[in-house]
Image (cartoon, rainbow, N blue to C red):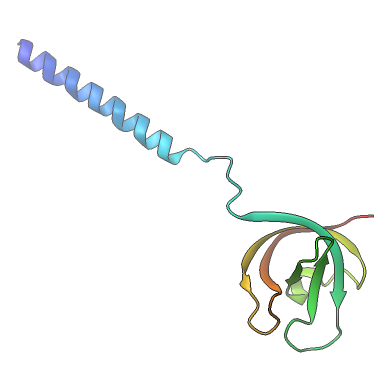
Length: 107
């Protein structure tokens, strides 16, 4: 009888640890997953070549973006951009390829 109760208690304790472990692993930290943010100006070359659409950040970095992501903006519009770096652009090094998460016009 004692043996059955101690086995049952052991199972409950192990189950409790299992739930604590699962919930702690599933918990989302305040890590930004590599998402960055910056202010800069839109630059549209009007061409159809690589690197034709860019955002020139105030800090000197340059993002190469897709025209689809900035079609509503015009050259010299000031913008605030949240983005994720995808790597250095192979055609326009050291410019940065990115995925835009959010972009908005600023004054």
